[in-house]
Length: 421
Ligand code: EPU
Image 1 (tube, helix red, strand yellow):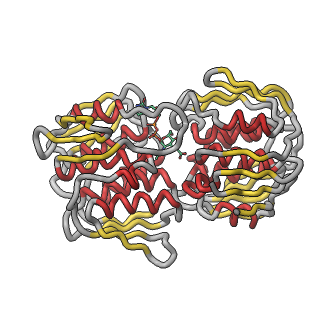
Image 2 (cartoon, protein in one colour):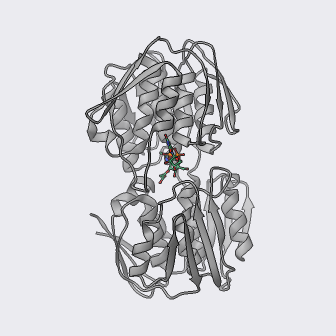
Image 3 (cartoon, protein in one colour):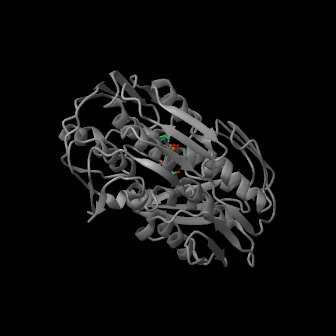
């Protein structure tokens, strides 16, 4: 495990630039499988992350060539599918590998993919993805830990799907299956996250016919072919939220740049409500968190435009500093509370009951050695460490590198004191 040493009592100031969205990239890159031979699939503003390497590795396994420019922020994909069977090496590392089930089956009528990996944030079944594949006439078997998909009729036929929950990944699977299916598809109770809209913008630029992305009903008219793409990935709204919260926990002052403020409307509204000054200027958000008397937090993590579940663990670090009882609930991932046991090692009095935590603040945070075994747990511990009374050692920095570009460099440029070992 890689270690991050974080100095306490920090007060951040300055400007930070936000990178491209990890989860948009995960949604868009598998769509390269759907392009015609001789097309070129170019993505810009790609975040430099270990998850990006993994996604590119998955595309390379299917037979595509993936090239990066010197900055590694532009990716170009060429070629065609030569292999519909993915190995466990990359699939086991990220959840988004399950999107290749839809992408490969839509492009070639079949796919074989082992159970996908990803953050351990509780139960993450694929039942909605599977039921969508079946709706499109795909037979799905599980054979020795491998999902095997085979289209009964190929090309696939458009259909109507209703998602029992507005799952982000399952909505992406449905879109991938529908864009080249014969006829029309309606997706009801679709996820509305900005990453879905970004995916639809990219696919539309390739020639797809999609309306309603970003709402709960998406309508798609299948097209025969999809061509080249040149697309800029949207900024990462969770990275933006993380830096806003880093300013907030350190009572700092600064600006977060290259963002789409509307994508963080739930967080901006909450920060204002508890007493933090914010100003939006186009693609920047200025924050002044000099106030030392924050009101307590009441927040429910919900599907977009509600508070993102990814932010829920980070909000708890702020709740420790608020005056009064904060109640934070996660309705999306009801077990995403791996940080609670680590907070206790930092002397934080926090009580969890099913999908809620209760924190009575303000509390003193003590430096300790802790473990973050997924991206947001590890980041939540960093935020708590910023206002601790000494040097905190966080094991699991490799998880932060999965989702945050140059995390230690960006934080140190704002005046934090972080060292990766
Ligand atoms: N669910 C099912 N069955 C399914 C699919 C989902 O029961 O077939 C449940 C999940 O167990 C969960 C809820 O539905 O309780 C929502 O899951 P969703 O499918 O929306 O999440 P996801 O697509 O697996 C993406 C992000 C997550 C983010 C969630 C929620 C990617 C690669 N991952 O996951 O991001 O937390 O949406 O917004 O896009 C992260 O970045 O750290 C991360 C985990």
